[in-house]
Every structure is written in C-alpha cells, then in structure tokens.
Image (cartoon, rainbow, N blue to C red; front, side):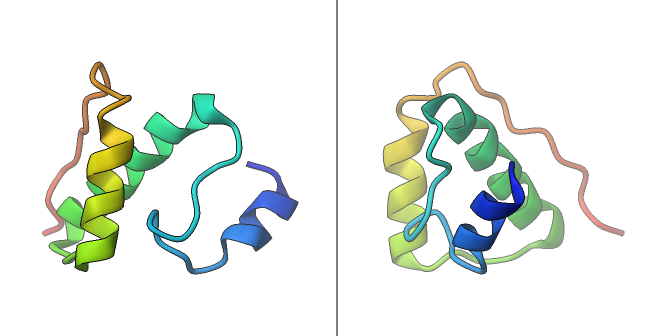
Length: 69
C-alpha cells in the first residue's frame, strides 16, 4: 500500500473504504478479519455487511490468526 492510499484509508473500516486495486481486496479483508478475531474486537452492522459482500469474491481466501494472550 502506498502512503497516499494509506492516508485515504485513515481510520475507515471496510464499509467506508477498500483498496482501489481489486487484487488487494481479498488480502485486505483477510487481514482486517484476522486482526478483529485476534483481539476479540466487534464489528458494527455496516462493517459486517461490507465484509460479507466483499468476501463473496474471495472464496479461496483463508483467514489465519492467533488469539492474543
């Protein structure tokens, strides 16, 4: 991710921002989800809905995470 893209993202969740490159979207969703799972963080309804929509195009993507101690 470039610095410009990172600035555009700021603190927005996947309901508000996705990487402009479609090839990066599945990895972004997987990493976002892994972070939420690792730290036991919740997702609001808009975020959960967006993740479901984008995940449909990522059927071969597997989310790997280790729960935080």
